[in-house]
Amino acid sequence: QVQLVESGGGLVQPGESLRLSCEASGNIDSINAMFWYRQASGKERESIASITNGGYTHYRDSVKGRFTIARNNAKNTLYLQMNSLEPDDTAVYYCNAVVLQIGVGKTDYWGQGTQVTVSS
Image (cartoon, rainbow, N blue to C red; front, side, top):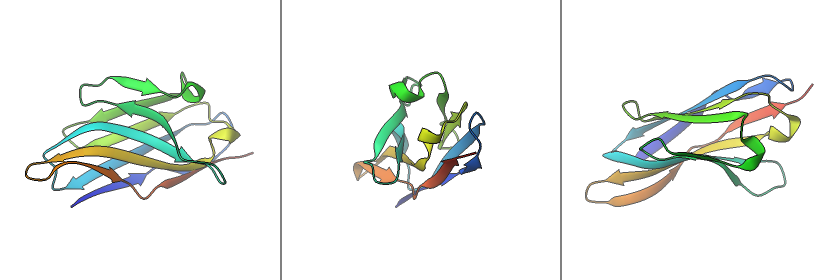
């Protein structure tokens, strides 16, 4: 089994920054792509950033230039640096990882989510 645990959420004012982390643990042989999603109240979950195991990144237009995704493969940890936060960034943020387990294959895992609230 694999667990993803997010941390770093909280309440900030507009313009401030937060750094989210997501640590993967368990029966992991390697992790392919990793993603950050978010879900605002009453809205569908949306992908906001992704990173391959080779470091190629992709961002949703609404966060480009403000958010940076990164990963530490040795620590099986994913990060999201969020700068210039706006009220519309308020949501529960989830990490997602495509994990390769020998004998099992590739499996999609999700974290439990961490709340980010941007409000003055």
